[in-house]
Length: 237
Image 1 (cartoon, rainbow, N blue to C red):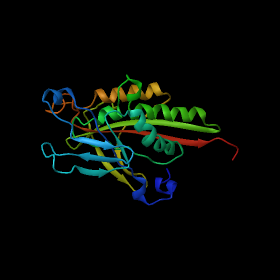
Image 2: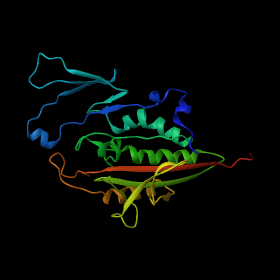
Image 3: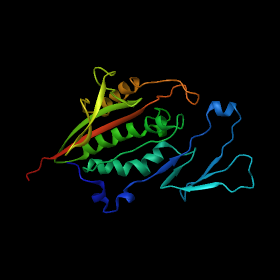
Image 4: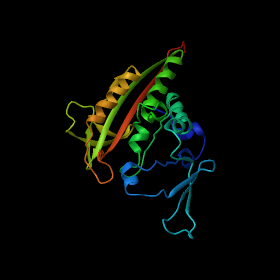
């Protein structure tokens, strides 16, 4: 079974969780409404400041994170500093999770899925695909099995975005050894970055989409893309 990340770092559990914040630029809707930026950041000190509009005498609210990324910083920077060491741990046999949290239109999909151009804004998930398969190609005396699954939680229902029937509701179960899992969730064996990107695109098309005031393409759901990596040493011992 995968080792615990806490053991890997030899630290307390709380020290193994990093919280970072990313600020996006104003979108076209906000510009049309003449909205003003109220967020500023000191990226060197990992501090975020929020000022109250029209209250010049009030000091801004101040928050400190493990990392801060302002509008001029790219997904590539965020990946290299935050996600890269996490994926390195995964290739060594440790569990790792990247959890994107924020309201509709805050940029979660942009950070995780990304865009193809410019290259610096490619998402965390496709970058993780490349990272994993580069590690596999460089490893000697080791065999890897890579599998992927993609599920959606929508209105408290769980759906398999890669299954033959994406409308079927799945059940959340708990196993004494495996822990919490989704019964009958399909996993797909992956042999290349291209295959990973194909099933990600397939699952993305199957997500529930509905218009909101904040975002006309809002997914209105939570999705979890999981990469299962099994590692086997093929040396004499």
